[in-house]
Length: 241
Image 1 (cartoon, one colour):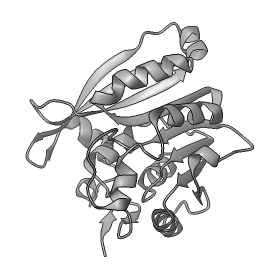
Image 2: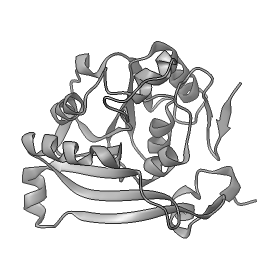
Image 3: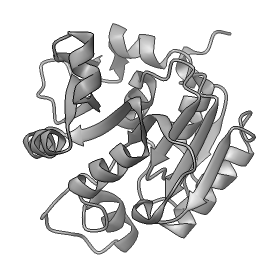
């Protein structure tokens, strides 16, 4: 049984195609939760991001997962956690999901590859490709579920950002912040964390978009100061004895 143990919770990932990885951990630690009353996790997978959001102070998290086996595993992980009463796991297609109340923060680590060759693992294909949820559909749905002053935070491949920029513009959304993740010092970023807000909200702040870089490792298995600071309350290696 594959279990990824963290300081305050554990993630069973036996039935999930996409396993816990450093990028997803960094992403979960970067999302500006700020005691958000309502958080939505689109494509929850193992429930990792939802659990991290709850640990960081989200009052309530709704996790939407299309694949039933993944959803059941996320529900198991939530049930074993200290925040089982603050996270709801729902099995459904996000395109069909409706909510009585909108969300303060919407997070997603969506399918990474569009029009790429696929392997033979059907579950992994569904998790990694955009056939079941295009970027256009994702942003359109996220905006419809977002509070007027809310925030959408995505982890995306660098190569998709120009398309995301065009889609955001068509929906009156602005990429207010971009953080490129460089795996090892001296390398090239392949993924980025972006924050999107409504054009109206962004214009009211009078701020300019920011673009920074975060290096995860200084060397082999040597976390940088930046990533250490982000993950010090999550990874067991940083737990104070």
